[in-house]
Length: 476
Image 1 (spheres, rainbow, N blue to C red):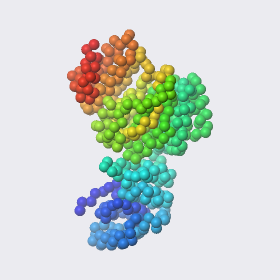
Image 2 (image 1 turned 135 degrees about the vertical axis):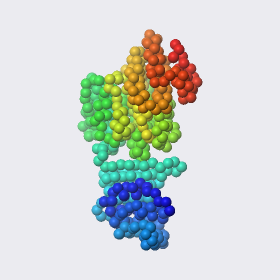
Image 3 (image 1 turned 60 degrees about the vertical axis):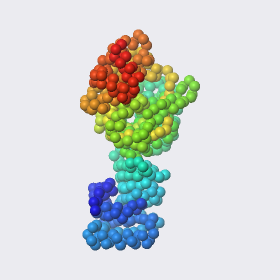
Image 4 (image 1 turned 30 degrees about the vertical axis):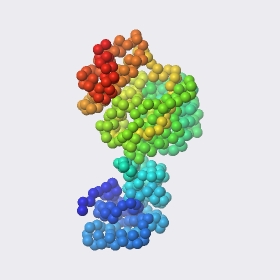
């Protein structure tokens, strides 16, 4: 018989000081118990079942026989109980579910285990729900969820590795007419493991005063004030001060469905994803109407994707909308992903490219939960003059971070992002600025890839019409 070591056994092997354990037996065979006892060294173990007493007696006999034959070594103290007989353990102990339901596990956690390691079946009571119930008393939780017709996902969490679970950063500049709606929408979720960092970027109106008013009644709100330096500098200052395991960004003239960040965090944590995203709506200021934005919320990302090559496609196909997601803080730090503070507009473009370029896992929630406000005076999206030249500064930075990877597949997707950006700009820019933009766009599109490969890859990835647009740009 070939025996494999799974997460539960590996955890126990690395934490032999945890002598007391409760193993909750769900839908598993006798062989699974053999695997556990072959690799663990527990001194005091209780097996908890929903089985009949007759079936438990049969199991007892098989375990004692296996020990007599030298196949396994059982704990010095081994007890067999039904769910209704279990009433907790003294001192520090571990709770080890084996393919049981979340409901079965929920009944056990009131006895405050220090560790929860194992697996549950997908159902109404999720791994995230278990975590919410136990996060104040548990030291570690490693809980795999078995999903029907999809690969399993795992929640991996250690207490005190971060002060907060989620940090939200708001770059604030002269948004007094909108910021209260934003604050109300994000703070309606009352979780105490969230913090809200408002960075006033030299705002000249009453925005900071409004934030202070709300901060007096909500300790999760922190106001940071700085001299004006642009949105990128405000986002970066916030990013440097976050205490959360995950971080998100929201523009304070926008607003959200009140459960957006709760849903995103649940998705992120249940699979330990680098990035968790949802869809968004375009909200029109003048009419007060909204509509779902066309976006790339598709499989395999909806089920959760751990294929780094597949994730790189999002460099091309996903919109620049960093505020509809959250990002694992350690992932950003490990890859030195930050905001380029001397870029005065569209600083979310390089952040989008680099996060999808280097992420190892992404999950998408097929719900439109963010409201992106349009038709507001002064928005960067309205720029149609020399301000669009900022694209060349952005791509100069990205040519370095993406180009140095030497990953041709990634460079192909990045080149498509460049092309789409320049097509967008050339459609908007005023005629008197178009010639200079075209000259610089041609040079930029030749920086990392020759014209023939760009044309070929554009046909494959974006279609013949866009490929002909590229050819026109290069020949004008």
